Amino acid sequence: MDSLSIFIIVISVVLAVVFKWYLFRRIQGWIDRDLIRGLSSSDPVLEQRLIEADRRFRAEGIKRAERHQKLEQLASDGEPGL
Image (cartoon, rainbow, N blue to C red; front, side):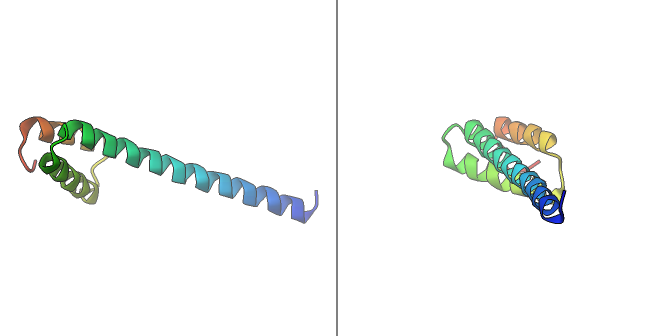
């Protein structure tokens, strides 16, 4: 195998990994937004509070599963903050 073939293989693998990571992050974002929309039940005020709470939870470094639980709790309580 010559160096050009190895270079092409390496670049292809790197690009595949980057694309998979990008796609995975996009799908997670869609799932998070869908959860917030479902929890808000078409209430724009509650939806905005949930979006802000999700941003705050992300900034605090809370893991995704725990964020979802806290958002569900927040939506059921109707209180702005945990």
